[in-house]
Every structure is written in structure tokens, then in C-alpha cells.
Length: 366
Image (cartoon, rainbow, N blue to C red; front, side, top):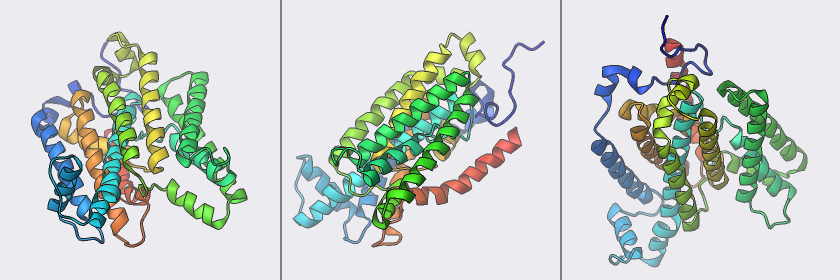
């Protein structure tokens, strides 16, 4: 009688990426050395940010971008006019950096949730956080809750927390297993989506409806350096927590029972990591709206480079998500210039084919 971990069937708990030990020699050969992965990723991210800032109606070179950054950091001077300096430093640079921050955070959330829930189709919004944030934002903007003292971002954050609290309550009541968490998230998603639609249809005028829908689809416009500093700190803090649980996440790849036999406190660890990813997602959604598919697609791409070990995988996923969303945002703000396309629309156009590919691969290995 075999004593190894039983491979469950079905989509909810049986189709997670293979654990490090099961990936075999073939996966090990595909992974790249850590210095090359991290050093190359950081260099590519810096180049992506520098080039992305140059793209737009105003003609600006990469050398101009570096001179502006050096001047504002006290490392030199720039010969650009104050107007062009402002375009680089006050408009494009904060937006591009926040795109990188959001991409990194959402990708890390997706990686952690796919491992915890043992579901390759899990993403940061599977817990209903996005739908709750949408409801909170709509309540503030359309109904005027708070009398102007509560901002759209604050309303979105409160709504996201309310949705996640409902998911925790439902999943705990139903037994707390991973499939119950997913199903509770789906229920919360549908509930808050219905509430959002009801408020918009009954109380919003045409202008409010257009503004809210644009934000719900993802927008990085109008951000500043305060947003970059705040959410960078949130993402770094969450990433450090997840890295601190890297070995535990590796154990979860074998299933909850196997993780428990290895000494993992399953319930406590899952609660900590789910709360961390939910709070991070809520923060990012409150700043940039609902940007989907980043947390679904990027973890799979990162595993092809870094393997399944989370100590390597999490930083690579963060870098991949940052680079990806920098270019997606650049495309969104320039492809139909002067009109801007919501970032979530572009990620969906790219993510849906990738989602279908994941489904196809899942069907083959099931």
C-alpha cells in the first residue's frame, strides 16, 4: 500500500503545478541560475521603465529620462525645460512606477493563492476582493457616503475588506477546506457585483456611470509620488511575509495533509497568507481599479523560468508582473491617443488567450 501523497482529482484541488520534487530533472534543466534570473529581471525592469516613460506625445529620449531622474535625486542637472521635466517626473514616471508596483503585487498574490488553494486558475480576485472594492467605490461616488470626507480609494479598500470578511465567514462555516474558500469567493463575487450593478442602475447619472465604469476596468491615471511610496511599501512588506513562508508554500504543493505531517500549521499559515494577499489586493485595487489576469497568467510564465520552489519563484514572479504591467499601461495610454484605454481591457485581451491555454494544459494533465 502506497504511503505517498494521493493525487486528488478535479479542478479545485487536483491540478496545481507540480511540487519541486515531482518536477524532476527536466524542470531543473529549464530553470536559470538565480543571479541571471534576478539580475536580468531587475535590468530589464529598469530599461522598461526608462523606455516606457519616453513613449507619448512629447518627444523625450532615454537620456533625457536619466538626466531628469539624476537631477531630482541630486546627482546632476538636466537641460530640459521645466515643462518637459514635469512631464517626465510628475506625470509619466509616477504612473509607470505604480504600474510596476501593481503588476508585481498582483503577480505575487496569484502565485501564493495558486499554491495555497492548489488551483492553477486561482488569481487575486478569486476571493471576491475586486467585486467588494468595486461596490465600495460605487457607494462613495454615486451615493455620496461620507459626505465627501471619504475618497474613492478609501471606499474601495473598505469594500474589499468587507468582501474578504464575508468569504472568511462563509468558508469557516462550511468547513474551511480549499474548495470551500474558492466557492465562498465566487459567491461573494456574485453578490457584490450585483450590488454594484444595482447602485449604478438606480442612482447614477450618465457621467457618474462612465467615470465609475472606467475606474472599475482599471486606470493608472492621475497618480502621484505619494501613491508610489505608499503602495511600494505595502508590496514590499507583503512580499517579505510571503518569502518568509516560502518553505511552507513548497509543502502545500503536496497537499494539506502532507504539509501537516511535515509540521506546517495549516490553518494558521493559510489564514495569514490569505489575509496578506487579500489586503495587498485590496490596496492595489483601491489605487488602480480592477486589473485582471495579471495574477492568473504571470505565475505560470515565471514557473517556466524559475521552477516551483517559492524562494526563487516569488521574486521572479514579482519582476515579471512589474515588467508586464509597465508595457500594458504604456500600450493602454498610447494605442488610441489622445483617448486612453482602461488597463484592465488590455490585460483581458492578452490574458483571455493565456487563460484558455492554461485550461487546455489543465485538461491534458488532469
